[in-house]
Image 1 (spheres, rainbow, N blue to C red):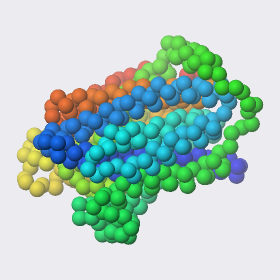
Image 2: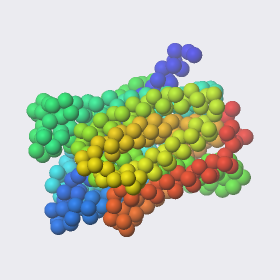
Image 3: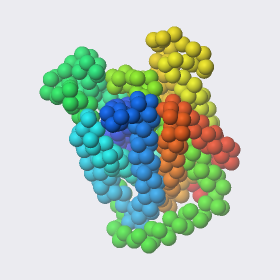
Image 4: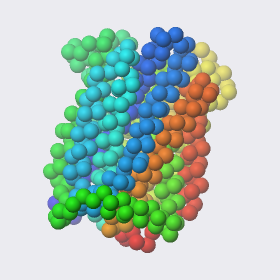
Length: 457
């Protein structure tokens, strides 16, 4: 491999390193649980019982993710088609970088008393939209990045490298910034060596600017090394883009394998995003974990994701992505069943001793599986999508892939919100994810392991 090609691949990896903390640090392990804590305290102060306040906090978090998911799901394919008609992707990535940074930075202004929780939901959504839309364009570069036989390994290595970035960011946050109830960080320091006010939760709130700066700094290798091929400038044409997108959607009826893969991934990736979006919130509301405990849980999960994404990429290269996806889904179903039937008092209906650490141990084990199989599932899915990608319109193809992952992104949060509201239990609220994973598993039956005939071989 030429030096320039190797640098280009590494530059592409650096996007995963730069962007992953939005998911690892903000969504799952630091800001999401912190938001749940703030919202719960706000509702308790308004007169709700703790159980109802927990359920209400999970419900509004799910509502925010639902609305964000709808915007991402229906906007991604249109933007992808626009990028393909214009022949350029980098300007779009620049624009979404701005959204990412503005949204993340704004989270610093979260009021610990909960007075602006709705504004912070909007801010989080803006940054998340930027992260996900940028990913559509970066994913679309993979088909032209390496030879077909190296796609699985490259996709897995990219996710593994990204999770290492997420782990590193999370460790720094826990060691230096995020405070627990005693006002100290995980290693017993004052937040930011005493520069931040623990009582105002500034050590935790700094996570927004921290993630924004992380993204800006570590996107530099991507912008330096991942250059676009010289393409004549073309005018953006919304009508042309919509015509192409409409044609691609209509053509799905003749591409049975692609259609079933998009439908399958629509359900199982929605379920996975539900796990990521509510894993830390579940630990906060059901197991009463502090932010530092959730952070350790996150480190373990992200380490597992990095290791298993790398191993899964190797397995993908040997067996193909489809068997890897099936195995990951089955493992994740068993995890959800476990956490639905567990709380502080019981495990699968068996009463536990007061103060038992068994739920904590089981949850840490679940974190290994969620991280490891989640990372493997995403990497193998990206690899299988490459096998179904139209080489004439890769961004549009990955826009459809983004649509399949986000068009129903409102379903998992909405179902969790509905079940939580009906049962009044944050624990039982995550149970619909089992059904979504099963639907994805069934639809994989009709997916060809080698993709469609038009895809690059």
